[in-house]
Length: 223
Ligand code: CTP
Ligand code: CA
Image 1 (cartoon, rainbow, N blue to C red):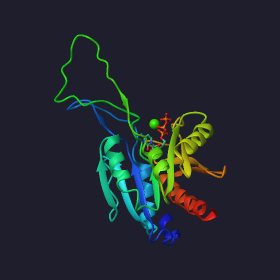
Image 2: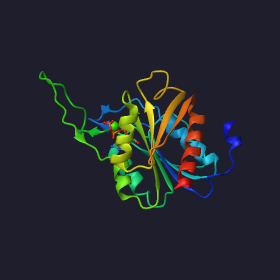
Image 3: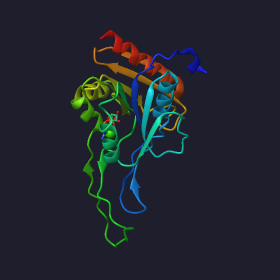
Image 4: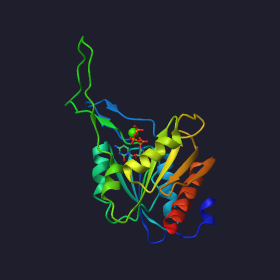
């Protein structure tokens, strides 16, 4: 197991990881969500814990076993995730936002909506950008965001790094069907504040997670 090659190099650190999709309810039985499997976030939480960190995992509901010994906070909507993350941000050393947060939500209708003859228009309103909020309000925390892109990966990832004031953006090419979302493997590129980047080639998500943590550790030490 990859974990045995690492010492407890994150001992004493508090790391918060968000994972999975959010769910925005339309009515009692319908909702808006996305394809996130949560696996990358769970792998990061588990890897951080194996390396000695005190880990909080804030996640949309998934059918994945939660690694033992970490603090698990299940959430549903983007608004719930915002609350869960921001209320715990102060005590964290590192925050990794791997969740696929809904960009839009809709007002929930009570009960189960009845269909009518006419078409239905849903009004979607913007959710709060959690990562951007963290970037604006952080004091000492190292902030890692993800970027799911289908094209112009570097340009969009660097844009998000800047706009959200993150310390690193970990870019996923979700256009590549062999990796990302539901896959067991992932390949990412990390874009750092100093203009450098680091490619992690396709490998199991657990190994990608360890490599991401090692890169975060390195980047924190060079500043
Ligand atoms: N994110 C967030 N809160 C939101 C939306 C996104 O915290 N309401 C975070 C994600 O967890 C991720 C990063 O922002 O770490 C980038 O998410 P992504 O969806 O790639 O970018 P967006 O800024 O939402 O832009 P777009 O979807 O248009 O590419
Ligand atoms: Ca988005």
